[in-house]
Length: 219
Image (cartoon, rainbow, N blue to C red; front, top):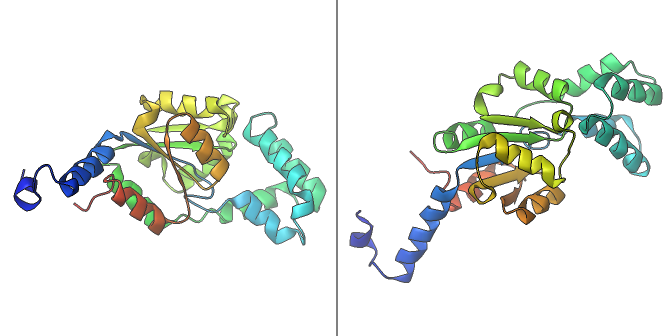
């Protein structure tokens, strides 16, 4: 190694550099959320455009989404409920929501880089059939070594069982994983289980965070 020639062995800077790279090397997998990370949260984005004041009904709509995400109701029943509420055909609502699934291309490039050294997993609160349709339309399956969707396992984040399913699917331990989600409550739940958690803001912030940990390196 040329490091001792540049930084004296035993110095604080030397120890910091070793810890910095060791931390990155310890991570075997990056586990991503989907909606709100790879693309906008298309359901809430659509609702925000069609409701003058979303807040008074957020709790009830959140319960409806939870029923969908946990597999308690089907996509058909979900969109029938929205159709009844908004007097808009369910098929049209679905199509308009799907149009909002615009991918963050910079994030995709980051995933392509870290996939060279880490497993990539997806843990999403969603209806499995609906999410797979979006993943297929954008040719995204190839990026993930494991995909865990809440409706398929009947547990949604922040339930610890959802994270345990994802760890099992990836074949890794909690301390070997960085979990990335736009919702702080999910990140905090992951940290309680021993995963490292990052609240997603944007691709630039994530790139900086992963670079600082030695996970994302220029090659």
